[in-house]
Each structure stands twice: as structure tokens, then as C-alpha cells.
Length: 432
Image (cartoon, rainbow, N blue to C red; front, side, top):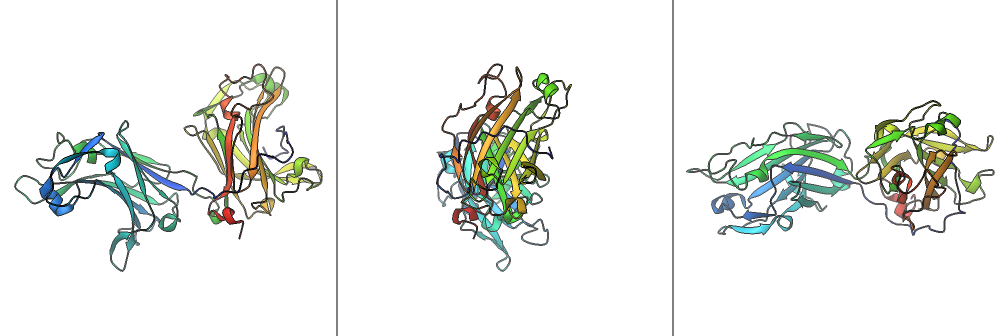
């Protein structure tokens, strides 16, 4: 936008809905492994002879090159997330167990002195999804994963212990042909398990468990764009479309050219004083705004993929013009599956000077529509470092025909909650 904001801000005093300061939620890495098959129950100790050699039936490994340096760790990999079936002790007998309860995950880190991976005291979790033949392994981005970046390589491998006819126990395996990174996915051909001789084969009941057909990696928050100074602003909405409709009401843009269909704004009272700065309604020193692609007069209805349709910026109140003025563009990501819009900002810039747990943020989601030109909006907020949940999940105001809770764009301005937190969780104790 790079101009004074034209979004209608309705300030209901300094919100009484302020939530107690809470610990910032940790960013979490999740790696999903897609398998040819993942039944509701699996057999453990299916090959007692192989158990004597390996101690487990199947295992799935996620090797992570955190520093993206092939000269550190084990062939570059510094952290290992491993999922496996229950440890078995020979002698044992084949037993059917529930898949969801049988799988467990651990994290290990490379120890150069010992020249091996050693267990970490940080937890990892695994969730099996039988319906989608997948499992998702998760771990917090702290400790050995604290410096994970978008360039960090992630390699996936699967293993199944068995005893080939007339030979010693060995393991069949499958893997992605090349590593993936955060926000990417890969596919792998089916029926390509290696080192698989009778009784291993595509007809073996356990073969689909180690037949990897795809993998993907995501984080619950975008990787911090500004390091330890990264502030995350999150809008939680009743819904977001995968494809954003634009120029929904051409008549609106005939009156207000070069405007937007929808916007999401957080007004920031950095010093917690509604009387300062002078001239600012509500005492807001800065604002972070996300808005859809600006539409000119004479536009016709069009659309764009959700993330490509969004722009975010930081604005600062200018006492000379008594308006918010553009400071800088900001990274923004949106997820239609979760209904979240997340903006990252740099706490160290002058426009955010004084940001602390005493600061207040007021979020507003708004949509412009016609007949006559109007703006429907919803809002909520809390102290910085806290999350809030909307008391009324159908609280959109100034919504009259053609606006209603049945129009397609209503959910995307219906706030269900939000948060404003710092990436390294310093907010929980103030900026110390």
C-alpha cells in the first residue's frame, strides 16, 4: 500500500479481553512420511531370527543437516529423528499390536568424539494416520534443532529387518532419492524397496510399511526471518480459501480505486498508554497490515493463489500528518488448512521500539463490499506475548446485505483468535 491506511479502525477502548501473559508457543518441525500402506495393527517379532540381530522389526529415520554443511556430522547430518516398532528381546513370538500405540520416536544428535549418534534429552513424537497411510514425526525447534533453516537438508529412510532364505539376518530399505527442505515435498516410486529377497517381497505383509512413496516437511511457524528478533503476529480465522477471490464487488472499486477486498490489521500500542502519541486514536504507535492485491477502478472479478494474493507491511504513526505511514514490507504466509495468517516483523527496528509484554495489540479483520460501499470487520486482541480466543466466533460487525455469514468471504474476516509472540520465547519473561 505504501500510504496512510484506509482501513476503518474501531477502537473499543483498550481491550478488556486482555489475556494473561502466557509462554510463547515453540516452533515445531513436522516431517510426514507417506507409505504404501500403514494398517491399524502390525506384527512385532515377525522374524525372531532377525530380532536376535536387530532388536526391532521396522524403523523409519529422518536425518537432518541442520547447518547445511556436508563436512559436519555424519555425512553432513547432525540430528536424527527415529521411529521404530517396539524393541523385542529374543526369544519372542509374533504378536499383533495396535500401530498407533506401537510406534515411538526419539531424537539423537551426532557426537564427533564418539563418532556416532547419541540420544538427546529433547523429545520427539510420532502420530500414525492409518487412513492416509502416513506418519508424522514432530520435534520442537530448540536445542540441536534451534538453528534449522530453509536450506537445511532432510533425508528420509525406512528399514525392515528380516532373514533371507538360507542367509544371515539383514535389512531391506527405501529412501527418498534426494533430501527435502522445509516447505517442500518429494515423491518416491512404489515397490522399489532395496535389498529385498525372499521372504521379503511386495506380497509380504510388512513390505508396504517400509515402501516409502513420499515425504514432506513443515514448521508450525515460518522459520524466523529476523533471527532472535523475529516477532510473529498470527491471525486465526474461521476459514481461508486456497484461492483468493479478488475484485469481488467491482462497484466498490469504482468508488475507491486502488484498494483491497480484505485486510487484516494489528494496531500496536507499544507503551501501553492510550494517550500517546498525540493525535493517534487509541494511542497506537505502529501497525502491521496484511491486505489482498490492490484492485483498480474498472476491475473485474479475478482470483489468485492465497499466498500470492497477500502483501504485508509495517507502518508507523507520523505526528506531522496524523496518519500511519509506510515503513517496510514484511514476510507473510497463510494456510488455508488451518485458517491462519502469520506475519513476521523485526523487533529491533525503530517502528517497534519499546515492544514488550506491557504493549497491546488489537487485531482487526475487514472486508470491503458494496451497496452502498461498506466495510465489515471483526476484532480482538491482548497484551503482546499472549494469545486470545474470540468470545464470539460470529462477531463480524457492519455486515448487512450483501454481507452475511453465508457469503464465501465471511469466514476469512471472522476472527477466532490470535497471538503476538517472539520466536525465542523471551516474551514470557519480558525482553530481558
